[in-house]
Length: 155
Image (cartoon, rainbow, N blue to C red; front, side, top):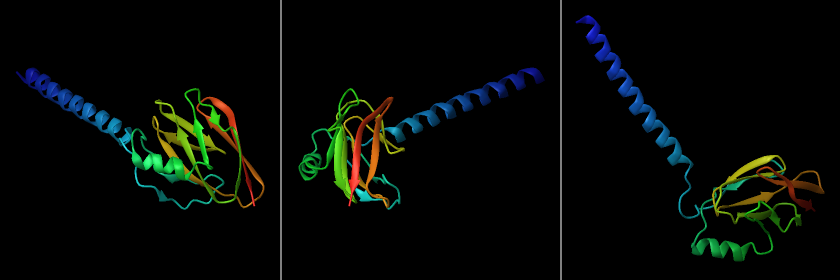
């Protein structure tokens, strides 16, 4: 009788652990999912050559995204389905905000001078690029594609 009681207690514990593990893994995945539209952009003061402004979001069918594309028409770098930067070479003034725009449906990790940003499918980041040492050349990597672009920061 004592052995049966231990088997029942063990089975109950196993079920509780399994339920907890399933709920925990689902909550992790929901945090990674971007919202269906871009979030409000707010500045994040970070002292580095590629400090971030974010967060990014999905840009499908959103009027706010269209206005941002118009606003950053001269300061926008797109990453295509093959992770190539368009344009691949840009020259800007120190402190200019650049719109980095993932035009692929796949999540991308884009690295700007060693700082990595997660871009959801069709997501974007708006990032002010600053440097205390000028001129400064920043390199762009997209996933495993290295040196897909450069940005020259000038006075």
